[in-house]
Image (cartoon, rainbow, N blue to C red):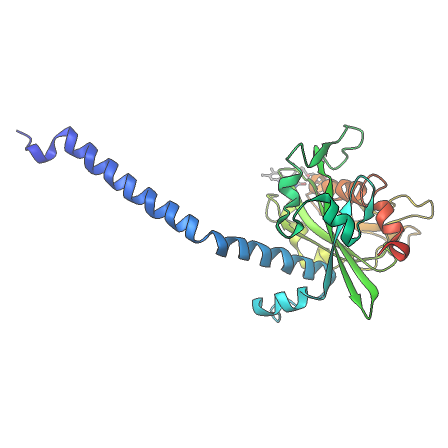
Length: 268
Ligand SMILES: Cc1cc2nc3c(=O)[nH]c(=O)nc-3n(C[C@H](O)[C@H](O)[C@H](O)COP(=O)(O)O)c2cc1C
């Protein structure tokens, strides 16, 4: 006969107590580690901005140096509706605390974003935040780089990254993707330093002022007339490549950062 200890009631009490203790430990750890997680997230974002701007040297730059290097950036707010950089007083007038602003969260909040029409939504992002952050790297008050957040759908996932442009707002100085779920070895090659190394020096806009940069299938013929606007497609990953092509077309186009970039001389 089963002893009193093995009764269903006792088994349930022990199982529930173990679940309760474990859930307290897990949620306690999650809460107590939240500041650390947030700090790591910010560190990773800042590292990616430095990578895009070409200021981060893999295997050389230490985590402790990232904050120091990042301080060289002027952090500015872009009004995506007005398509221009806001002055400090205009930022205050928005009533938004941009030191805690999360653009990705804002893009999901109907009060802080707009829905894109299917014609506009070439990057397949559905909504766009009303405000974006731009990172300006200046030396002796002269603009050297502008780093902008970009995102758009690939094959399996949304690709989140940054693109850095020179002071002409046209020449690419770097690109990086810090989050996506594309297949390693196929679409995941957007992370490959070799592929990202093709981008610096490419030009975004054609003589008509429209986005001319395209990701082509195969390799770029460096002697072809449009080579400065072309980037090699990733082999076996045409759909992810198309996603990158589309997100560049949207974010650097005239419905997003295009007018900001064309007015960099007068508007920084
Ligand atoms: C398991 C699996 C994962 C794949 N992952 C990707 C991917 O991440 N990105 C992508 O563009 N294509 C991916 N593909 C391939 C696409 O289905 C498609 O064949 C490819 O984009 C076509 O590119 P290609 O014309 O360069 O061959 C994957 C295919 C399979 C079977």
